[in-house]
Structures are given as C-alpha cells and as structure tokens.
Length: 237
Ligand SMILES: Nc1ncnc2c1ncn2[C@@H]1O[C@H](COP(=O)(O)OP(=O)(O)OP(=O)(O)O)[C@@H](O)[C@H]1O
Image (cartoon, rainbow, N blue to C red):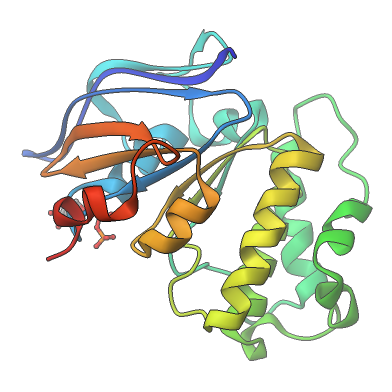
C-alpha cells in the first residue's frame, strides 16, 4: 500500500508553548487509524497541523507525495483533506441541507463543478434526507454527528479526520456511526483517522493505532496483533 499522508519530524507550538515534538507518522492509503491518548496530550493539535490551522515550527507534512506544509487550510481541503471537528460545529440556525451545502465549498477551485449534494450522502445517512429542511440546532447528538460527517464528505475528501466521533452519542447510535464509517472507507475509498477515547470503538473500527503522550507519538501498532487492554494503561487516567 502507498502512503497517503506522511508527517516527518513534525513539531508545533501555541506561541511559546510547544505542544508537539518530533512526530513521525505514515497513514497508508485506504487505512483506518485510531489516534489515542489521555486528555491534553496533543491529539487535536496534531489534526490542526494536518489541516493547516496551526503552522509547524519544524518538520514537514506530505499528502499524496506533495509537501503541503506551507499550504493554507482551504488549499489542503481542496486537495482532499476533510475534518469532522470535536463538538461537530454544525451551524445551528441553518437547515440540514444548508449545512451540507457549506461543505461543498471545498470543491471550489478544484476544477470541479460545485453542483448539488452528492446522492451518496443521503444514501449513507437516510435520516438526513428525511429531516433536510429542519434547523440543525434541534437535532439529536447522533444526527448532528451524521450531519458533520456528511458535510465533510461533501468536499469529496480522500482523507477524513474525525475528532472524537462518539463523544456525547448514545451507545445505540455509536454502532450506526461505525457502520457509516466502514461504508465510507469501503465504498467511497476514503482513508480515515479517528481521535477516540473509547477504546472498544477504536479497536472495532481501526486497523492501526497510534498512542500520544505529552506531545510525542510513543507507540504504534496493529489493532489485530494487540488488544485494547495492552495499551489501556497508556490512555486511561
Ligand atoms: N489554542 C490554544 N492555545 C494554547 N494552548 C492550547 C490551545 N489549544 C490547546 N492547547 C494546549 O495544547 C495541549 C494539547 O491540547 P489538545 O487539545 O491538542 O489535546 P488533546 O489530546 O486533543 O486533548 P483532548 O482529548 O482534551 O481534546 C494542551 O496542553 C492544551 O492546553
């Protein structure tokens, strides 16, 4: 398999406060990776560096063989990096359909017509079709998460980063989210990286895991060769 995303000795800081140190990470094309670690170790910050919301202080980021370290966020989105942020950040006063339309803007400048919301979004999340005229602010947590994923998919990413997709979601809906992510990977050929506190979900969904501790990547491996219990002590408080 080829490498889709490569982080090479990445470091990043908020002002004077360094948060990431010397991160080396390869994400294979077609892979599903869980990024795990205690609160505050830098997982979200790592996503911010990948999407270009935070500049690197050293190192480089490569996507599809191209150094994207100096590109702006919108340029990285156009190249195919999508984010489902922690807390979902949907627009509560817009309808479901209008929220999805905001996701189409990543296509602007990629030489593709922006067009309509792709059918596969409503195929993945039929509920969104039923409630497309409803204001997003009144949706349940699970529906908002589906909307946030659908919105990111409107930009036709080849890499989708999801920051704690199960946070605040009822257990019966977690399974639906997992099923949708599997289909996104298999049918849409999207490579997926999740930040996940809930190790059972991480192990069920992902092929590989990476553990962060105090701004460093300290361990990586296969979720098929090791169990969640093998790494739980590195993640649980
Ligand atoms: N905008 C910011 N300005 C300054 N420091 C920040 C900022 N955002 C995060 N930090 C600090 O950077 C460190 C890493 O935070 P980050 O949110 O990346 O961790 P995390 O592993 O994603 O944690 P969580 O699971 O709580 O989201 C923390 O010490 C945090 O306080």
